[in-house]
View (tube, rainbow over the protein chains, first blue to last red):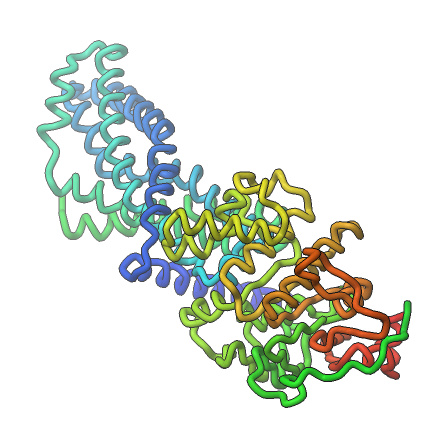
Amino acid sequence: MATLAIDRSLKQIVLAVQEYSLFAWRALLNLFRPPIYWTDFLIQSDIIGVGSLPIVILSGFFTGGVLALQSAATLEEFGATAVTGQFVSLTMIRELGAVLTGIMVAGRNASSMASELGSMVVTEQIDAMRALGVDPLRKLVTPRIFSSIVMLLLLTIVADAFGILGGDAVTVLLNHQNGTQYLNSAYEHLRYSDIIQGLVKPLFFGYLLSSIGCFYGMRTTGGTEGVGRSTISAVVTSSVLIIAVDFLITHVLLSIFPT
Amino acid sequence: MSHAFPTAPQSPARAQGAGAVVRLSGVSLGFGGPDVLSNISFSVAPGETRILLGPAGVGKSVLLKLIIGLLRPQEGTVLLLGDDISSLPEERLFTLRARAGMVFQEGALFDSLTVRDNIGYQLIQERAPDDEIDQRVREALTFVGLEQTFDLYPASLSGGMKRRVAIARALIHDPELILYDSPTGGLDPVTSTTIIELIVKQRDVHATPALLVTHRLQDAFTLCNHRFDAEQNRMVQLPEGQINPNTTFLMLEEGRLILDGSLHELLHSTNSEVREFLE
């Protein structure tokens, strides 16, 4: 009995992965095949990009601040407080800017995609769209994925910048150190490979969070309760996958750009 | 219920069985358990209105979704407007579906769009000029008697108004076939009559072939014994003893087709399940 249950669960997981792969692949291919719904792309860019700006700015700023606070205490023991700027900027640009922005946007937008599309599924709006001869994958999913990729890249740059500014504010106001020295240190030790690492990741994260949000939304069943389940699954899965994929990408990028 | 209708003459197209708009042959479908639909075969001829009767939960809505390609049969073939959609790629199905219209059970209006954008949805996707969209939406709204709702959102419409908007959305593209999924379900008798009047109007003015799902016999009989009078701009009852010859019946029971015939055949059926439904 238990073996049967495990067998069934495993099959369901494999089936879900297969369905997701096909779904995400088709949605990705649609980026390069007309018709492309540019108006929907702009609307989604506004919702995902401009709408997420406040939370990305705040989370970036305070993360940079915390990094400066924590690192300054440790670096002081070695008399190396002068490299606080380098520490904060490298951490934000190479790692935290992309991951934090990915998780924040996943919480805000993967959930919104899953609930919006899920509601459309349970009220037969998706069926109505198909019956009217419009492909929901092209009309609803592809613009969301395209916008998420582009906007997450830009939001990550914003988060990095505000993270460094947050670190600067803490360095000057709380640690009573030299702000110019902080900014010089933050800038001078940056390499192109660091920036590339930081800007490659959001492309993957944007694709992940949007395709997962849309996937869970489009396979919603079970009425309004099902919409709630899809929303939770979308946020949890995309957040966990962002961290897991970050590990993989970092591993690959470090082999390409050794420190 | 009056059973005093005479034998209905078969429509010429149906009698010949030629050039069907929809043809199902041996269609079966299940969702992991017992078949929801089993070995279903019937056709809809040009100009014909077929009323699909049956109690709730026997697979009527599933059958409509099969016909328009939203679901695929596990066995058998479905011909829609001359194309076998059983194995047609999804990409080509979109083009084919755009030639038909479907009115969903609860209307299925896009709740974030205005009535204008809902009705003109197909035209907007085709990038038709705004003026043309406005004009055609207004014409469609006039047809369903809701001119004043042009700028409203679905949330501010009553249940009956939503169905009428859904009908307008299905009709704006001059479909070659219309599928109505319980268009009067859950509505009060007066609103139901308004909806049936629209269906009769579409049938008699445009002669669009249709398949209408309902479990309300009253609606089915109204469709049979009324016609649309263009001069009076309203539905009028046919003279005693006359019925519309192009309106015929199907009945589903537990996924099986138990009746395919005229009103006369429905009323005089000896099938116990048909009799039970009628009584």
